Image (cartoon, rainbow, N blue to C red):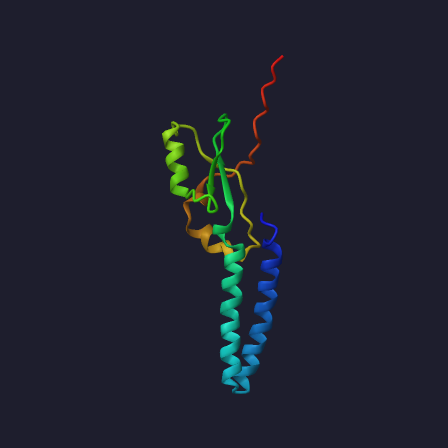
Length: 136
């Protein structure tokens, strides 16, 4: 979870409620410029919110049980889901692949990603790094 996710989603939700109130009042009073400004405000608000809290702004960690090295999908490091799967298959790819991250259901900017991206079809298992070997 990113530090910005909760404030961005809260501001987006409160801003949407406020702008819908402005939309309804401007429609009833036939103030078309205010109506257009409210629609534009909604579009800008959610575009910025999606940019800050959407699915492309996070690193995703995948692993197999017993494998000491996790696999990573990262937009910042230009490692796509397909690239991560390629590395997994090159390393053998026989063990079941798990995702080590949960779904944040409260983050509505990711709901469409939960519905269509194949990463969410993998089973969730909390990732625990292996214990380092001690020479003794």
